[in-house]
Length: 150
Image 1: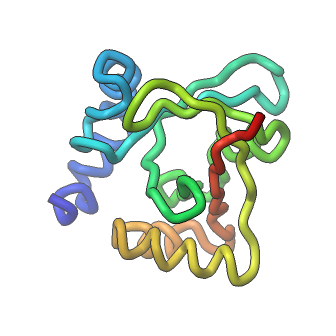
Image 2: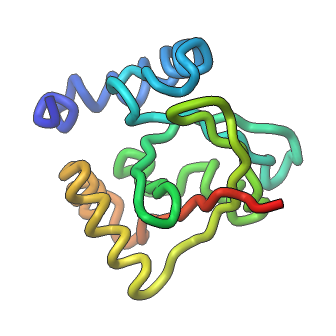
C-alpha cells in the first residue's frame, strides 16, 4: 500500500481527494477511520495565523511516547503547509484521533528532538524522505502535539 501512496496516483489521491473524505469520515467514526485506514489520520483544528479563525486540517499523526507527531511535509511542495504556521502562531489546538476531540499544545521540534522524531516519521512512512528531497532547501517542520494540561 505504501508504494501505491508514493506513486503518482497515490500522490493525487492524498493531495486532492483524501482531505474531503477525511473531513466527513473522521468525525463520524470518532477519529478512528480515515481515507488512509484505521488510526492513521486525525483532524487538527487550530487558530489561523492571519485570520484568527478556526481551521481544521486532516493530518497524518504518529504516536510517540510524549504525544503525537505531525510532519509538515506539504507533500514535498516548496512552501510550508498553512497549518504549520497556525501552530507556530497559536500552539493550542484540538485533535480528533482515536477517539473524541482532545486539547493539545504544539511544539515545533529542533535539534536532536527533531532528528529523533524525523527518524520515527521516516520509519512510519518512507515517502517523507522523498518529500524532504523534493522540497529542499526548505526544512520540513516537525511538531510534537502534547496533551494539554489543566
